[in-house]
Each structure stands twice: as structure tokens, then as C-alpha cells.
Picture 1 (cartoon, rainbow, N blue to C red):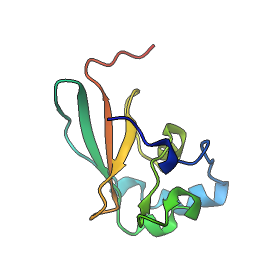
Picture 2: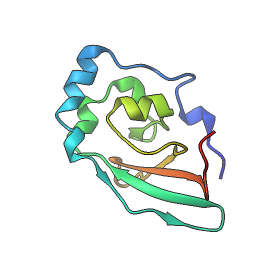
Picture 3: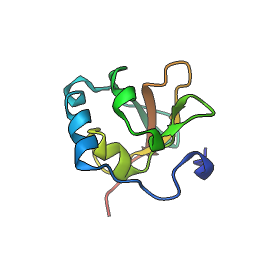
Picture 4: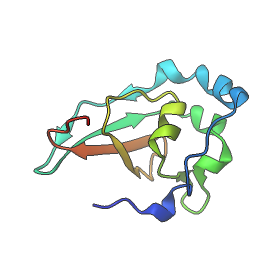
Length: 111
């Protein structure tokens, strides 16, 4: 389950101070699922408040799919998503584009 690099920005796109300020009101409404796993990865999904999608800069959106792009760690952290190290945004749940799917290797150890 490799990450499709074509669904990401070529490099992380930082938020401006005004963009970050617009998103701040939504941070407390971000919901984190419990972790679940298979033989290779542990997973979790992060549910953003639906209204937050409209405040996220257009460069973070995939206009062809109607969802967010796959976000670099710097990008999802800038949105206010807080998780321990090692998580990678690997998919967006298309029927519900405010739900972001994350994975990391089982027994991940930070370097």
C-alpha cells in the first residue's frame, strides 16, 4: 500500500499566519479514532469538522476527486492534527472527505 505521490503537493506547502488563524477555531473539533491494525501497519482515522474543509487552502485540495490531497506531515500538523511520530496520511475517505486515513508500521520506533 504505497503512497501515490501524484496525489500530494510536490513539496509541503506551508500555511500563512492568516490561514493558520482561520483554522484555529476548528482544532478542538478534530476527532481521532482508536488505533486498529493488520499484520503490517497500525491505522487510525482523523475526522475534521466538516466546516473546516472550506477554511483549508485550495492548494491542499484535489479538485478531481473533491477531497483533500494526501498531506505531508508538515501540512497535516499545520492544520492542527496532533499525533505521535511515524504516522503517514495515505488516503481520504471519498464519500466523507473530512475523514483522513493514517497508517504507520507496527511497532514503530522513532529514530
